[in-house]
Amino acid sequence: MITNRVQVKYSLMLTYFLFAILLNSVGTVILQVINSYGVSKEAASVLEGFKDLPIALVSFMFAAYLPRLGYRNAMLLGTLLVTGSCLLMPLIPEFWMTKVLFFCVGSAFGLVKVSLYSTIGLISDNKQQHASVMNTIEGIFMVGVLSGYWLFGAFIDGQNPASSGWLNVYWSLALLAGLNVLLLWRTPFANPVPAQGTPPAEEFLAMLKLAYKPLVLVFILSAFLYVLIEQGLGTWLPTFNNQVLHLPADMSVQATSIFAACLAIGRLGAGVLMQLINWYLLLNICLLAMALLIVVSMPLANLAQPQQDMSWTSAPVAAFVFPLIGLFMAPIYPAINSIMLSSLPRSQHSGMTGLIVIFSALGGTTGSLITGFVFGSFSGQTAFYLSLLPIAAILVSLFYFRQGTLAAGRA
Image (tube, rainbow, N blue to C red):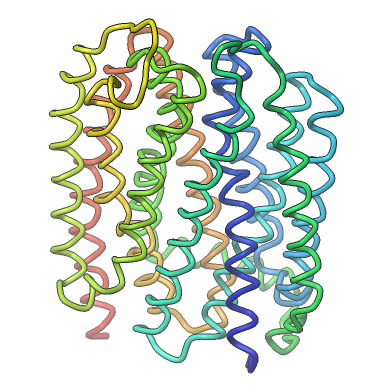
């Protein structure tokens, strides 16, 4: 059992903060490679796949073995990998290097997220504490996302969209990653669980067998659909702001921070709300509010007109209304993850987290590709309207997930 819980918690927060910036920069980078490198929307949308598919692959291959490697060691390895790739980005200003960066970020996150989620189980004594720590760390993740939009926005030349000056942001990110390496190195939780006598092959099969449980299958579907929505909207929101709402490139990225801020506020406050309201009722209210905001915001987006000198005071109303969807989206993912993980013994947390990461990554890639294709072929409004379909599907899947958790509680 880990004893220095506060130090471990801080190291987990900084690690997640770093990866929040890198992972969620894909929407900003898509906008910038379209402007700087002349890449089409369809071609740029593959960056989400270069990020998410390695997450799924690494999680699938290594999740069951990470307790043997040590969670801290896995996070150190991942952080060192992104440090090196950030240093290369401004040195090699090519589209293919952007693909390499996100491949490295995705591979590293596959190690980091499984290790981080498993460590949460080791520093929590009960379900309430687990949910609290999960929501706090997921909230810090969204603070990282919010910070990332403003950090990238500070390096983007709004008057010259084709400028490659935005690549200089990666010097700052490499420095942050290096500091994170030092903190992890000084946090002693390299072997958080005792070595198990089970052969590695059996540990891997045990992870796969989890997916055959009906409750886990319904949970996986819910997580997949949620991430499909979040990544589809979040990844393409900077481009939506730029090409549909006619905001300058730097404002388009900074305006997306409203979405991230709402997610951060929602997740940091979700722990309190879940103590007052049943999780199933809360999540249903959130899903219905998400659908309502989409229906209200898209007609407002149609009213946006190009302006010579766009400012925050003259920006379209839709730029401020639509991102509020993050407030209602925020509690869903950490809530279902915590409910699923806390219903399992700690020895299965690593394998279950592997499944979470795998299907979340697949959901993110699917959402970004579908949104990018519809955006390029039809319009941004049509692409965002399509989110109503997975929202309806989550309402159905959550019903069966609740039934499954109630049945498990009686068993």
